Length: 281
Image (tube, rainbow, N blue to C red):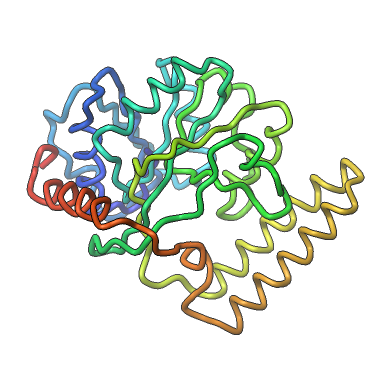
C-alpha cells in the first residue's frame, strides 16, 4: 500500500485489512513523501504485521510498488490504494482461487465505485476470463489495479516500468505481459474503488496520451498496424468526449449502475462499520 497524503482515508483502508477473515498476511505500507502527517500519526503499537517504510522521498507509484515487490516475503502479492476499501472476504477469496488455480498469474475482482463520502456510485466494467480481459488490447484491460493479487514470482519477473507512463502503470504492465501470462477476474465485488469528486481535464488528457504512447510503442514493435490504428481511434474518441462532455469523463465515465440493492446494503454496512471501528486509531 503506497501512501501519498492519505489523510483520514488511510485509517479506513487499514481497518479494512485488519478486519479481513484471512489473517496470514503482512502489509507493506510505504510512504511516498507525504506531507500531511497521516503515516506519522499512526499509533506506535500498530499491528506488527504492518511494516511501515518512510524515506521522505516522492518517487511515484511504480517505484514504490517495485520496492514492495522486493520487500515482499509472501507467496502472493496483493495491491491496494490508501483510499480504497477491501471487503472482509477479499484476501480469503483471492488466496483460495490462486491456490486452486496454479496457472493463474494475476487475479482481480469486480469493484464498486464509491465517492469521497462513501456514496456508492455504481460498478466498473468486469471481465472474468483471460480471453475476455485481453480481447481488445487497444481498448485497454478491465482488471482494476487496486484489486490485484498475483504470484510474487510473477511480479518479480515482470515488475512495473520505470519511468512509468503517467497514471497508467497498470495498463502498461498488463499490455506488456498478457501474451505470456494468465489473468482472471473474480465475479464478486471485493473492493470499493474510491473516486475523487473532481479531477482536472488536463490530468485526464495527459493520462489518455500516456496510455496511447504505451500502446503505440507496443503495436509498432510488433508491426500490428490494425492494433495501432484501433488504439489511435479509441484515444481520439475518448479525448473528444473528455473535452466535449466534462463531468462524465476519465475513470468516472466507465462507472455504470447495476449494483443490486443487496450489494449496496452489504457495502453500506461494511463502510459504516469501518467509520466507527477505530482499530488503527
